[in-house]
Length: 249
Length: 90
Ligand SMILES: [Zn+2]
Image 1 (cartoon, helix red, strand yellow):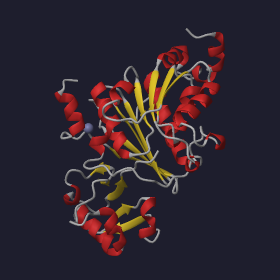
Image 2 (cartoon, rainbow over the protein chains, first blue to last red):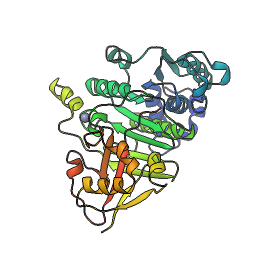
Image 3 (tube, each protein chain N blue to C red):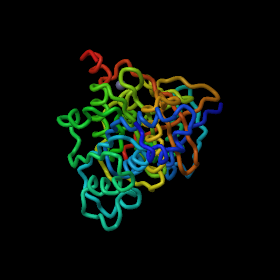
Image 4 (cartoon, chains in turn cyan, yellow):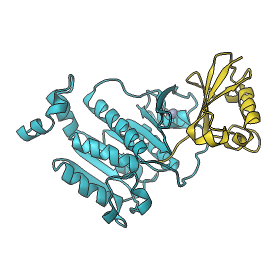
């Protein structure tokens, strides 16, 4: 059920053909797992919360540093030194009081990821490093939860949506060893844009609208202002996909 | 012979700011050799010490991944090659 206030608040998206009050109810019932409350996470969280997602579970173990503030717009000067999930939760609860925010101030690892994503309808990758993305990719495949990959570097960004067992996964896309975590250059508008594309995918998936960005890697180059779409095929030898098929999922 | 190679903004400093480089070759390996002969500092960004393509570099020919052939993937006149590196920031 939507209250009169909710109907008024979400009126402009309910008006979209195919969305309607049914779509809004689906959003209200949905739980999204957001891995990371940084640059991508700020954009994803802000727009999902404003759109009236039911529950947003945010995992991030980081403390806010000055170097985060050029892009992680949920965190402000006065928040430096605080936990990112605390700062993010505080802002998001003010943005939309009806949304349940579940902060998890833990490091996402192989041994806890399963518990963290349990019960969520979709996982959004807003991490700042590649090894954790692979942990999330594997967990998404194992638990059969759709996964929206997003990443940025400088003026460049990448996005792809993964439907477990059906479309190319992150490991199908990038083979071999993963470069370790490192400091990367970035301008805030890039994660803002990529995060908004990820949030768009989440909303479309939950409301069942449009076509998802599956088997397609979207590459954004802000300097030449070009979007390029590359075909991503499932790799028949992909270890991540294989493991899931072997375990009978 | 005209094969276009799209250069990621990250590598522009090594290609004299050329966003698109015309290369020659009958396969991806030859095209990349052509590129690195023209711009030698690109070599370290694409290959390891044994001249193997780095794991985090993906080559696309006309929007399709060159994997698993990679360097051996045949190319022809009019093809467009993109070098895509794995990105991890957030
Ligand atoms: Zn796979």
